[in-house]
View 1 (cartoon, rainbow, N blue to C red):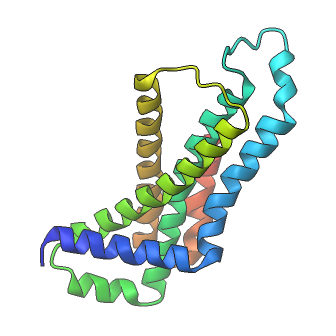
View 2 (cartoon, rainbow, N blue to C red):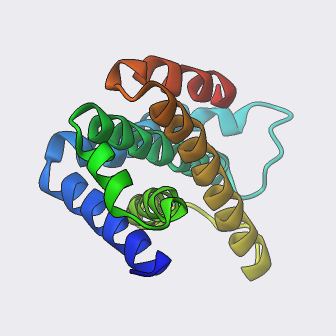
View 3 (cartoon, rainbow, N blue to C red):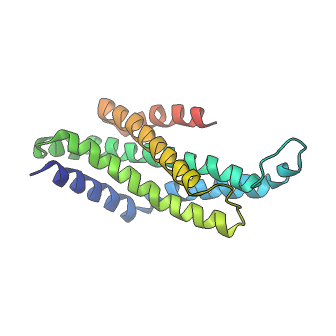
Length: 184
């Protein structure tokens, strides 16, 4: 068994569990959409404040924040899945079966990234439909999404590390709260 087999197996199982259980996937999808709607819609009059000189407008300004927030929390929520796997006993069996343990962590990280890419695609489509003006070029957009991927990995490696240390979902507040505080 090669490392890629472990990575793809763990990622497939994690994504399948997330997609088959709405209570796992829906918060990852709905929270960013709710925040974008609430902040970009409800606070859109902030663009009229003197001194708010962001040419693409408040919707684009808010999109960047919500995109980064969705990346971080997709990583954190995948860390919750790691904790659930270890709490339920699957993690121990996985450690015994995988010849390359780094593949386990990388598989979870790949799942976090793919999970976020779905959310990012939906969020971007909603933002464009809502009238967001894109104020950058291709390099700027690629840079934004690469930055969001790095934030996704940071969120996952933080929460995944805590999940591997505590091996219980009861560590969820410790995983989520520091990320929440850093974002706000």
